[in-house]
Image (tube, rainbow, N blue to C red; front, side):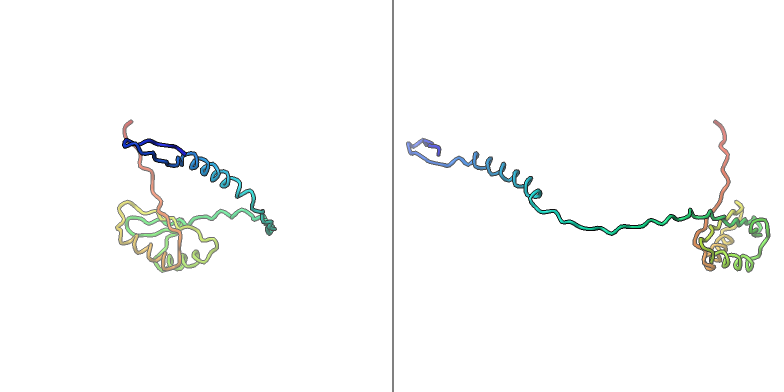
Length: 141
């Protein structure tokens, strides 16, 4: 207990709580550290897994569809019409895993033709469609 003298001559007795706060903080830290150690560990038996060795997936050969600027289409090296393309895409869409359709279109081909081919492929059930482009040579140095 500290005795404080005021200006008017009265004696004021106030409790200094700083040491009390220090002791309480130290006790709080001690309890925070020791509390998790006092809880009992729960023993659990986990199920065991058996790993099956899976063969690596077979590489899927993509479908090469070339479209010339006049609208003629080539499935690999074979020229196909739109109904033949629809039939071939329907067969390819049923394969597991499904091969990707790689479309190589001429630079001057109208967008409507590509849109029609994409709609046909989607309607046949094709999921993986890619556009193949040529590298543009860099000029200068």
